[in-house]
Amino acid sequence: MPSTTPPADSPAAADVAARPRIESREQDGRRWIVASGRWTTLAMSSASDWQALAKSLDALPRQDDAAWDLRPIAQLDHIGAQLLWERWRHDWPATLELAPQHKAVLDQVAQYTVGTPEEPPKTLVERLRDFSHNGPRAMGVTRDFVGLIGQLTIDVGRLLAAPHRGPWRDFSGHLYQFGATALHITALVGLLIGVVLAYLISQQLRQYGAETFVVNILGLSLVRELGPVLAAVLIAGRSGSAITAQIGVMRVTEELDAMRVMGIPHGFRLVMPRVLALAIAMPLISLWTSMAALLGGMLAADAALDISPAYFLSALPRAVPIANLWLATAKSAVFGILIALIGCYFGMKVKPNTESLGRGTTSSVVTSITAVILVDALFAVLFKGIGFRG
Image (cartoon, rainbow, N blue to C red):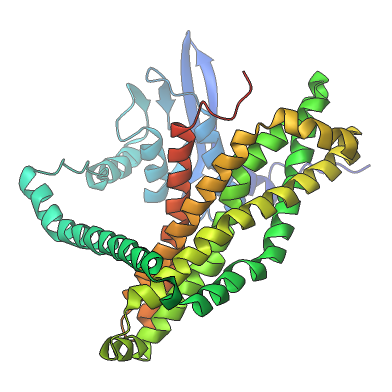
């Protein structure tokens, strides 16, 4: 077979010798790092050569007492010098051997290379100035949102005092739109989440022979946490954005101004029906999503761990105390109220233009999901001792 090694005087051999290289040597009990080849932009123009050189530099251990020998370098330009200077962390090595022309290039790079300056801490005046710009806006948002909650409380009191004057037609329509039409998507997502969780858990439990504990893990995680949070995130993206868009379109088309002229209160006819509808629909959707997720987990446990559905259903009540169900229901009702209030708030704040409508809808979804996660964390801390077997 003919040899594939190029002759020493061939162009291929010269090209290999010109590539920038770096190697480590031991001499006189000291570690030397020797660089050779051409450290120029042209020599490192190939992405593979650049990556190989950068990998070689990164592979060198960080030792401050290492000596560097740059005399074998045939040619050095500012790009190669910059690469070495960054490897030295903007400081000269303790021992450095190099040619005079290379030192001139390195001196120029060291002179004009400035590290990223640390940002000085803000003074008290700057902090007060930042608060003067952002503080009033934050306080204004808090004031308006608290006012919306207060108006909702008054409207619920009016409804209890005169139920026959309540907007029941709007309430039933929103209950159907937020609840019944969301059952298919929440069931599908919950089923798939249950399957994925069961397969992941089964891979770990099988190693310890604790396959039966998949019922405990799936039951507690889905009923107590994942079911309500997953349903709330889906409803925030689906119904929360719809609430903001509906009220925002009414702002753009000046329907809200017409309602104010006719003496129709916005809170009683727009906010309260949506809040009550989501407060009732959200616990039911959460329960529905948890059931779908448990069904998916049960099927996956039967396929992966040979745990029969009969055993799964019989062990589930023992593994998950009923207190978890009441906690999930109460948590879901709070989620529904928050999602509806945030959607109504951003819908009321939409300005009469389409750009503000899109921005308000996006802010509503992001704020709703963030609020759901924060409230869920708060519930987890406050009720950490409830719903677990001793």
